[in-house]
Image (cartoon, rainbow, N blue to C red; front, side):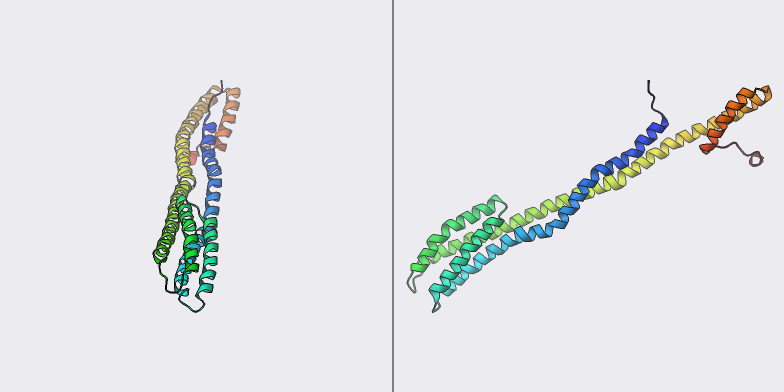
Length: 240
């Protein structure tokens, strides 16, 4: 039957911290990589989507202003082409159902309004209410973009808290717990070894009195091993 020795226990406690760090290291590495890549991801997706919605809003204002200018029809057509392009850009950067729904509504409402604007005679403002509705849909998209950004911020904050917890547990709490456990275990074993040293000294005195060479040889081996473990034979001069 295999017995669990103090050496086995100490090795087990000592290996806990490296094992925890081994498991935590990939988590920490992926987390730090994610934080490093976050600005680029936000720029490529959320900021680009917000910019597309803002440009759609600007295009609608320019259409409303441009139709009263001498080259109003050309201005309106140019802004409408740009508006369609910004819809595609916003769709490619959408990441939530709310954004997709807002973009779909804008796409469905835009073409009829644009057709009416191109066909309208100077001074015809009959399409103005629908244009305002379209501007409201674009405002809804901007709100959806802002909500998506806030959602990402919340997820990043939650991930940061998790990273802090993992770091504190893996790099601080577990090593210190292992250290305390080892100190307690070695403290008890130290007391036991001191008792063994005192017992060996007592046996050595009786062996010397009995003139038993074999016992003296065995005690010499024990004495050497105890000295190697940090428990040498007491110095008589210090005892005095």
